[in-house]
Amino acid sequence: MSYDQAEKLRNQLSSERTAKTIAVCSGKGGVGKSNFTVNFSIKLAQENHKILVFDLDVGMGNIDLLLGMQTEFSIADVLNNRISIRDAIVKSPYGIDYIPGGSGLHSFLEMDEHKEAIFYQGLEKLLREYDYILLDMGAGVTETALFFILAADECFVVTTPEPTSITDAYSMVKHILSNRADMPIYTILNRVRNQIDGSNILDNFHTVIHRFLDGKAQALGFIPEDANVMKAVMHQKPYTMLYPKTKASKAIDLILQAYVNQTKILIRKPGSFIERIKHFMKG
Ligand SMILES: Nc1ncnc2c1ncn2[C@@H]1O[C@H](COP(=O)(O)OP(=O)(O)O)[C@@H](O)[C@H]1O
Ligand SMILES: [Mg+2]
Figure (spheres, helix red, strand yellow):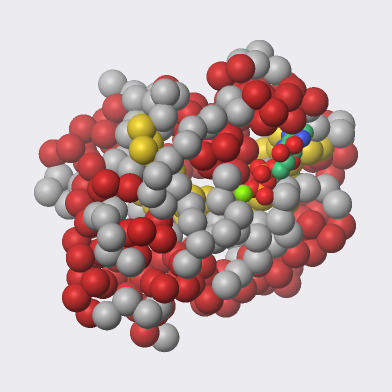
């Protein structure tokens, strides 16, 4: 039995079975978070995990577009209690489920106790049903987005090699660690033009994080600049499906491998996603 299978079995046997929540974030926008989230999720699903992608990029959500789907409802309808969180879930043809983004994440803060209770109940059920819930965040940090990021079990920080993107990613990591020193952080460098550049930039980034933030962040690897990524976006199909052999798809395979190897040695932190959302909301 592989480690993964063993962990799955343990989870199934445990009454406290709960999805691992991963917030995918960045400092700067447009660095490739959503493309990464979708394609990484598809690869995870192919390893027999049940995946839910939660599009939390308020106003700019585009998971719909990347999957070539059109949906009637979004997270906004859930927060307004028009529909239940379960009814907002869409099944994609690629083995992953998702909740479409919409405007109005701020209404999360305006929910009364009754609405809040319904939302948490729904979320609790989803946490028991899925193996992983990936939160595709918007650029930067609005107050509500930050609650979700801080409440997650782990954070993936995506950056490109551009200095502005790196500095913004650094600020993001700093922000996260100053609120939750125990947060496991993984970094992904996207749109790398050559391998040596990629390794050097990622090394420097980690040296800085280590030296100035006294925090640990693990590099998961990099994704090359690949014209097939944009082509796939134009076709509204995930690149790992449309071009499984392209450089970017192969990179996702390696990142997934690196992730599985790293999490083998990480002991899962106790505490729950929902408890942490409540904790950070109340300040
Ligand atoms: N590895 C890559 N190679 C080439 N282009 C990429 C790559 N990753 C992302 N892009 C381009 O960047 C655009 C923005 O990506 P997206 O995932 O929507 O970013 P974000 O979610 O961070 O705003 C994509 O539409 C695509 O054209
Ligand atoms: Mg996005």
